[in-house]
Length: 67
Image (tube, rainbow, N blue to C red; front, side, top):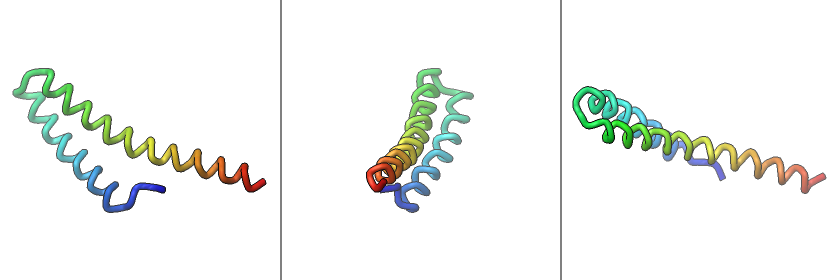
């Protein structure tokens, strides 16, 4: 099952907000703050990509089973 559009849109919006936070943090916060914000960004992207990858694998397995 793929991510619903509202969930994916919310995750993308969160990424935009985190990018803004990262830009501000890079100018005035300790480096570990920027590192963790960047990690959150990567985690969201990985979540979206992993979901798509899992769906593709599931589709391929289903096609093989049907043959």
